[in-house]
Amino acid sequence: MINKLISDIKKIDNFSDEEIDQFFSYLTEGFIAKGDHFLKMGEVSHHVAFITSGLGMHYKIYDGIEIPIDFTPEGMWLAYLASFTNGTPADVAIKALEDTKILKLSAMKMQELFQWQPKFMALKNFYTELSFMSTAQHGADLAMLNGKQRYYKFIQEKPDLLNRVPQYYIAAYLGIKPQSLSRLRNEK
Amino acid sequence: MNDILVNEIKSIGNFSKEDIELFFSFLEESFIAKGDHFLSEGQISHYVAYITSGLTMHYEVHDGVEIPRAFRIENQWIGALKNFGNREPADSAIKALEDTWLLRISATNLQKAFQLQPKLIALKDHYTELSFIKNMQHGSDLAMLNAKQRYYKFMRESPDVINRVPQYYIAAYLGIKPQSLSRLRKEK
Image (cartoon, chains in turn purple, cyan):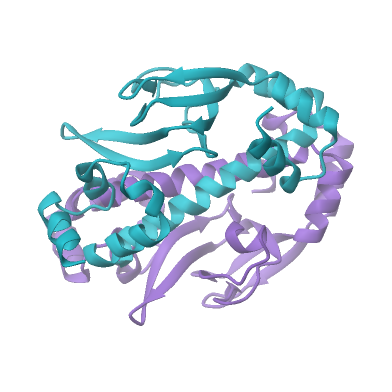
């Protein structure tokens, strides 16, 4: 996954090997055990993290139920920008659905990095855009498609998640009742 | 230079007068009549734009119905990031719901500006984040809230939009039937 990160960086701009080394020197290794939190509701988020292995889930709690907003697998960045950028308490939590290994970057280090080489802002923007497009699409799907269509789209686009995420989370993410999800799975 | 935009830029980062002038030198004024498109589905998206007056709707067509993804008013940016700057035709469209004045910048010029002053990437990243956060919120509202809650939340958070957008668009945006929306409006 480190190689993917390096190739992402090289795609974005003409960074020298020294600049890339420097970028990695700002990152620190971290581990989140399955079920533990990267960010708790009400906390201020001080880090973003690249997932080298594992799976994270953004969620909100509604009527006592965890409603997933996003799933983030290896090779992607885990962050809650609404809190990280503005320094406000998070109205969303992030937890690991698997043992997860990460490379963390703190808000302070990120500012240092950007001051040293502003071109790295393009890297952050690249990942922010990716997340933006994925959530925009999910919102549009929730507004436009029915339960069955949403489920089939999910299977098609994220087949790897289907076996890694518990059923009730997938149902809640797709806004369908767990019973309906079981029915859809049996239909297949 | 548009004063509101200048002040906003100053609040985003530590930009010199020259940085801001450089950025503005790439902006061009443009006008879209009510009902006309800033971006049509299938077109290549060459521009992003700051609205100085007016209102636009970003939408997708599903089963012949226009489903709004986002409404944007004066002092906000519009653009289809998924397709902006790459050569892929847009899978969504943006049209003006009122006569709309814009300051637009092309993908090519934006890249030029970033090359001349990489610090300006912070602007794009700031606005990407804003849209991302809004979208994520809309997605989780669609998944978690019922129609009535979604309508009341929209009224509270976007009172300036509600009287300027036709009812059927608001209904489609909130994922509720037009009849239900009329009922909710009368209840009030």
